Image 1 (cartoon, rainbow, N blue to C red):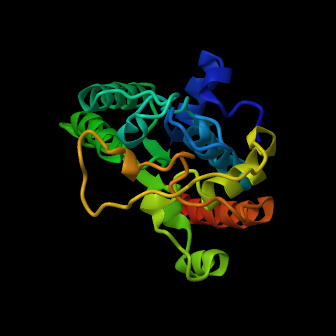
Image 2 (spheres, rainbow, N blue to C red; image 1 turned 135 degrees about the vertical axis):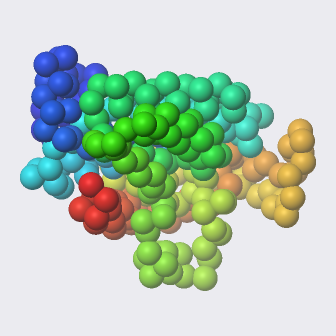
Length: 253
């Protein structure tokens, strides 16, 4: 990892130089949200941030700047658990708009949102698109490009079958499950708590009830069983994600 690839660790002349060099501004996005008994509330943010670091390290020939991540977002399905912090949808749209507008004002025309949290996606995308649309209005040259990617969209069906066999619960249920636990066992093993017996059972409803009923929440906080998670699985997942990110950067920037 280059010593000065993080926005918050750089001086203003270094940031100006990165913009002049056409650096890709990578914006990790996550949440502050309960993640079961083994993972901390910053799990989504930490995965996105470490994957961004891995991308930078994997492409030394390219110029990147990793912006401070979006931590406070929306995680309402987990609001009943202690530790989860939610913004309103309106607030998140406005904050995302302002942050993206400021990244653009600083001269970065290539922005990659690397997302690790599902529920906030439409709000982040709306805010980012509004800022991009405003910037593009009336411009004839140097028009900015923003690419959005969820890290799980870069994992192939083949790898999922290899890891899960016929027990794949679907991404909508893989909260604090095997994939996130494995990724953090690979990326940040010291923050993962030891495995212990846990009650992961809950009723999967084909609709949404407000407020969410207790029967639709696992007591452990893991909506899919993390049993079998390992650093080796995490390494395989991370390698495939970073390979996909490299292809994305080469194709779009």
